[in-house]
Structures are given as structure tokens and as C-alpha cells.
Image 1: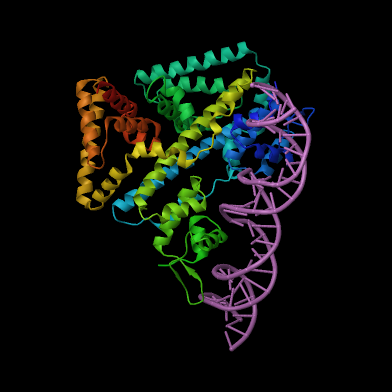
Image 2: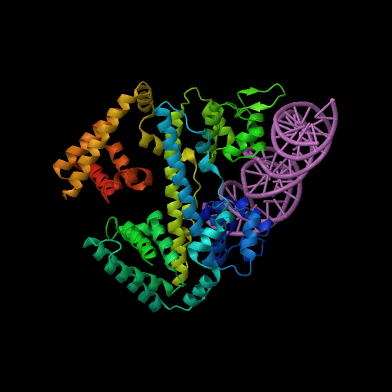
Length: 250
Length: 250
DNA sequence: CTAGACCCTGACGTAACGTCAGGGTCAAGC
DNA sequence: GCTTGACCCTGACGTTACGTCAGGGTCTAG
């Protein structure tokens, strides 16, 4: 299956000119051409385009995108995970701006003016590279993480099924403890926390600090939160508190 | 108090050149100049700049921003509220992209490829004007809404205090019903829903449809959700369900 | 065999600044 | 009173990521 420029443009909701441009600057060319010289894009090209668009959405320049993707260490999974973290950060920033708007409204209604320092607090522009450290902390030491990527690459569908069942069991245990009204620092809950951490270590080294970070993400990031909230309202916060407690108790 | 370009630039985290540019295109000039011709910005200029930056963050072009702000009907409160709604929409979009990344990762892990139609679903670019209708629906008929703005403009601090107390009382009633385990369509809950709707009508006409929309926003928008979730975990969803039920029962 | 919807490659236009260049201003310190 | 370094001014040209023709070939339905 191959697509022409127009078709790809419609699919990805970009202009034909944009695709021409990406081809011209060597960012993304089609895998092939027809006899008449028409660009013919394959599935791998679409995947690459999706990557490019994610990066673009995150504010990378085309030069930067090309550099990142040309890197020999570039791995689509790594990239998606990094993009995920950056997007989460962006969501946080948007949330901060919402708060700032509310403050501005409140100040207006109260007839006061905002402090000029606060007023622009949220605008410091979001430089993805600035968050590199945070991303690393969140996703762990890159080296270790990459090992996990290699490890899971060999996973069969059955392996994934088993992993999923394990995760579900841990989540059920959390939900049960939560419903029973146990405190986050209850030894029984802490046992589950440790089980959870070990289930993650299957993939990459996960210190208690990192685990606590992950916990925070469970409430900050709606995608993760949903997983827990679907089981029981407030469960995400409970799990977060429990991982924080584990760090405190250690 | 007046600020020079450099000071404003530092405060707002934009370049001096940007401020020069905004001045040159007539978007935002300083209120005054020093004897030497230095630009001197006042507090009102800072407020205007904040507005401009919010609009810019939302993807408006400078031309559009100028047009909107030059509109005789332009009101800072209206603008902030509209910006708020657009930002919430943006947050939703970011959430959708997170989901899409997760899907891409899942497909990778499962060794399958994504459907090419889904793949770019989230990219349709966010044209603020496209959401005008939605915003209008959310914030109600502009005419009616503007009346509310005028009405509240005359509110004293005591008025606001009373309004706040009323809102709190309604929220407490919701929380109580929620803790008592009542169903969202329980008549007692529906009574509270109606009380809530009427408390909003103080500000602008709020049909049951619009009320249901607001309810949806309480769970979608973390800023609103927080208000409810702080009282009881899961309360936001409960209130949302209750407003939906009110529409169904009507 | 022709109309209409595609595709191609230049090539110039544009928005929102970045980046000098050439020159005045201002407060601190000698 | 004079210098020095940090700041300000106004042009004016450069850059990124495309938009928008222009001039010309291709493809498929009728």
C-alpha cells in the first residue's frame, strides 16, 4: 500500500506544500516514486511523519527534529516515551496558565491588580531541552532504560499478557486496600507498593525515589490517573500517597 | 511606577525585540516615553501584554490579536474567560495526543501497526475560531453573557462574599448527597442540581443544556474538578452525572 | 479524447521575530 | 568632569516554515 502526497496530506491534516518542504529539507522523503515522478509514501513514512508532527507540536524546530531523528541511537519507542513526558509537562503548563487566568479574573473582580512578577510567571517558554533532566529522572537513567527497551523488544504476546495480568493483580490489591480504608503507610499497603515497584523493575531499575516520582505522575497525568480512577475514585491519589510514604519510611 | 523595555522583557520573558516589534505593528506601545525617547510601560500596558501573550499562546496571529483587542466590545474579563475556555480545549487536545502516543506505543509493543486514519487523528490543528461556537455554547449567548458581566461589574465585595457563600452551600449539599450514596437522578439530588443552576442564573441565563455542558466541564477541566474533588473524591463526576440526569429527566 | 482533479518543480511572498550596525543615554566610579 | 559598561534608540537585512502562484505534465472517468 502506498499513498500519494495529497492522500498523506489529507490523512495527516497538513498541506501538500508542507510535505514538499519536508522532502526538500531532507526531513522526510517518500520511500519511492512512481514512473511519472509522483511521491509514493509507505507505512514507515507515515510513522516517521507522525513522529515529526509530535516533535513539531512540542515546539522543536525542523532542524532539531532532523538532528534527533538522525541520531544513530534514535529509537521510535524512546522517542514516543520522551514525547509523552514532554506532552505531560505541556499539559502541566497549560494547567498553570489556567490557574493564572483565574488569578487575573479574581484580581479583576476584587478590583485589585496582580503583582507584576506573578503576572507573567507562566510564560517562561517551554524549552524541551530544559526538561531533559526531568525526563531522565522520570524515565530513569537512559542507559538502564535502553536496556529495558532491548529486553522488551523480545517479548512475545504471551509475555505481554502475563505482564498485564501481573499489573492488574497489583492494581486490584491497591483497590482492595483502599476500599478497606487502610492508611497509605499501613504495612499491608506498603507490601503492595513494594510488589508494584518490583513489577516495574522487570523493565528498568526503579529506585524508591523514582517510584515516588511515578506515583506523583499517577495523579498529575490524566492518562495514568484514569487507569486507577476507573477502578475506584480517589485510588490514584491513594497510590501516589503510598509511594510517597514508602520513600519517607525508607 | 514605570518600566523600561528591558525590565518588561525580563518580567514577561520575551525579547526586547519582540516588544519593539509589537510597538512597530501597533499592537502594544508604551504609555509614555522618557525625555531621551526611552519607552516607559505602565501597569495597564503590562496587563495588555499579558492578554497579548495569552492570545499568542492560543495560536492567534498578531493581526487577529490586534483585531480582537481593538474591538469596541473588548472587555478584559470576557477575553480572560474566552482564553480560559480555549486553554481548557487545548488541555483536552494535549490529553488526546497523550492517548494517541500510548496507542502508538501499544501498537509497537504488540508488533502491529496503527490504522493510518487513527494515526493522525489528533493533529487537526486547533483553530480557535473553529471552537467559537463551542465557546459560545459553554459561556452562553454572548449578548446574555455580556449582560452578566455588566451586572457583576457593580458587585461590591460583600456581594461577592454572599455569592461565594451560596456556592459553598450548594457544593456542601452535593457532597452530602454524594456521601449518603444517593443516585445522581434521585429527586433530592435533582433538587440540588436545580438550586445550583439557579445560583448560576444570577450571572447569566443557564439552560439545562448549558448546565449539563458545565457539568461535563467539571470533570474535564482540572481547575474546576479540583474544587469538587477537594471536598470528596469522585464528587466532580457525581455532579456531572447529576446535571446530565437533569437534562435527561427534563 | 477531453475535462477536471491530481502531480511536478521552481520561485517569490509572508509572519514574527533574530541579529547586527551605528549611534545616543545613564549611573557608578575614579 | 570624564570614562566605562550596561542600557536605550532606529533602521535594515536574515531566518524559519511554510503559503501562494506560475507553467507544465499525468491520470481516470465519461
